[in-house]
Amino acid sequence: DIQMTQSPSSVSASVGDRVIIICRASQDVSTWLDWYQWKPGKAPKLLIYAASSLPSGVPSRFSGSGSGTEFTLTIDSLQPEDFATYFCQQAKSFPFTFGPGTKVDLK
Amino acid sequence: QVQLQESGPGLVKPSQTLSLTCIVSSASISGGNYYWSWIRQPSGKGLEWIGDIHYSGSTHYNPSLKSRASVSVDTSKNQFSLRLSSVTAADTAVYFCARAKRDPWYFDYWGQGTLVTVSS
View 1 (tube, rainbow over the protein chains, first blue to last red):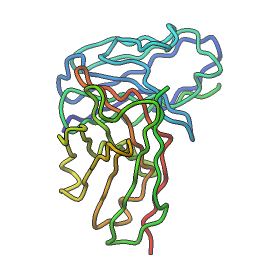
View 2 (cartoon, rainbow over the protein chains, first blue to last red):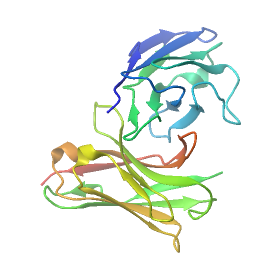
View 3 (tube, one colour):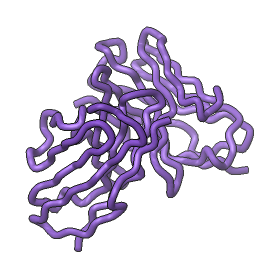
View 4 (cartoon, rainbow over the protein chains, first blue to last red):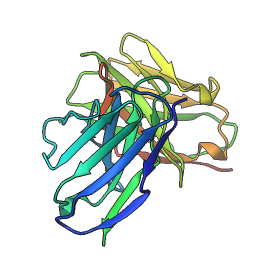
């Protein structure tokens, strides 16, 4: 199985800050990497697919980059509704595997 | 807006079979190149993909579950189901259903999740 790691595991930030989250894969996943946002009690939400593509309706302050084994999720100008947990997921091969998550909370 | 809602018992006894259903709204389970998926998160642990099914019957499973998992689809009711046999406390988790789009693969809609506890 492809192992996914994320750093940091948590980050404290203020509204307006730029937040960068890193996701690493244990082997090359090309650009088959997705990012999700999750708030307790709610359904996870797709933020980025195929490493850098933004689904319709996702604010442009979210962006993704990377290929191979290292990827980043950037949130420009953090908004109050962005305090949540973010996790990555490789979609290169079965079984699909997820990163452990990065919690973004209020400083 | 596509909606998915998990339903099923919140408590299952060890060695029994866990059964969950996901009802899909505002989308046809028979339409498009989608795989209908189950994912879980044990308490304090990361997400684990369990398996999925296409309306045609094609399935994928996580080998870590050692063939205990079975996903089925009922197109007449627009829902799909998970059965996980011989459960232990390690199967206690929040279970999510989700829709996976293929090529590129991603989960574009998820349910809110349902907690299933395995305990006698």
